[in-house]
Image (cartoon, rainbow, N blue to C red):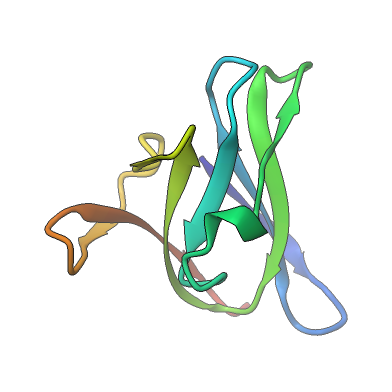
Length: 100
């Protein structure tokens, strides 16, 4: 699931929260066009209150593709109905951040 904050940062970016419902004790990372598809650059933290993994980012308005990486396995964001085909014959989740 992706949550977009309506407020802009001083740099014109938007605060984005990525969330994934998954059991505690896993290694969960986020890889996408915003971090050159490098999952090790964006490890998600487990929120024991919400019982999910979360990662906050600041992204400029634009089109981004991403996937979660759970214990090394690349998976779609099942809470996001927007996706696009990739060069590997699978799908990537998509988020479009609009400029207000």
